[in-house]
Image (cartoon, rainbow, N blue to C red; front, side):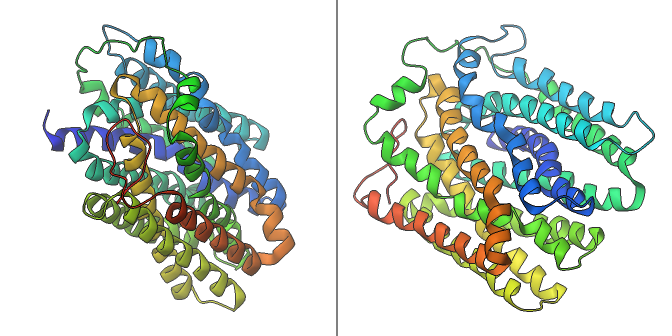
Amino acid sequence: MKTSTKLGLLSSLYLSQGLPFGFFTQALPVLLRHQGLSLPAIGLAHLLALPWALKFLWAPFMDRHGSARWGLRRGYILPLQCLSAGLLLSLALPDSTVDTRLLLAAVLGVNLLAATQDVATDGLAVTLLSPSERGWGNGIQVAAYRVGMILGGGVMLAVFDKAGWRPTLLALGLTLLVATVPVALYREPPTEPAPRASLGLEWWWRRPGAATWLVLLVVYKAGEALATGMLRTFLVDRGLTLTDIAWLLGGVGFTAGLLGALIGGSLVVKLGRRRALLLFGVIQATAVLLYALVASFPSSLPWLTAVCAVEHVASGMATATVFTAMMDACRPEHAATDYTVQASLVVLATGAAAAVSGFSAQALGYPGHFALSALLCLAGTLYVALAFHPSREPTPGTPEVSS
């Protein structure tokens, strides 16, 4: 299978996951703030993403059991994606405004479906991409996911601002169905299910260097998640309209995030995993600190736009590097489980940070909140410098990060 074909298929899959998650993380906080919810309540709404943190519990089952006719991974991806689209379209049936409780319940359901699909998608990505393709593969993955988040978040905010709930949910569900076409046309080669032995978490506990690596996954992105958990409400409180926020996160976020992911994916092989994590971690901490600066003084839309662009570039570079190193740590025959264990830790850490972000912003104010977030970003980067020696060379199936 050609590299371009692999990247095209993975782009459609990760865009599909980004669509509903972008609505949940970008559009929903803004809409809840406009309905008068408090900052702590909006922060706690991030707990609806809990299935993304718990998906490691059912990942071993998905590695062991799959459809011989539809494919070990495709047999899960295709029906789950269709169910997600159907759930979103069902919310568009009522003519009136969607009840907040019903909307939150639907968000939880879509997160459960998308998180389960992500297990199969990540397993497919690890087995499809060779080690030399993983840099670009993860750059494309992060970029496509961000495109999906921008479409589901920023663009849907603009649609909501102009047309209301029903067209927004119809557009979201139909876009997800269109993104299903590539995987519907894909024919997955026969794959032997993974053996039961050494499949679950117990293998990670016995793995040399695993504890150090798993701690890195917890601390590296948590600071940025703490900052961005209150970014949308910060923009609302600064007086930006829904259209302004949609343009800021949609146009600027799309372009900058896409660029950052591609830069990070292309440089991680040249720099090495450790050096890339260090460099992009410092850039990420600096970008978050810029939010503290613009929050300290009256800021015009151009200044907010510039800072948002820098942060999206930095986040894209750092995320693509982390994902590439996570693939290196996977065994091909247990790809879904190994990658999901790592991804669940990242989601758990970032979700917990986002959940408490409202309390931090309320207690410290936006400037103090963003400054604290920048310090946490820097702490995660320092951990990479102290915990991983430059002489370690990465090999597939080992968790060490090296230069």
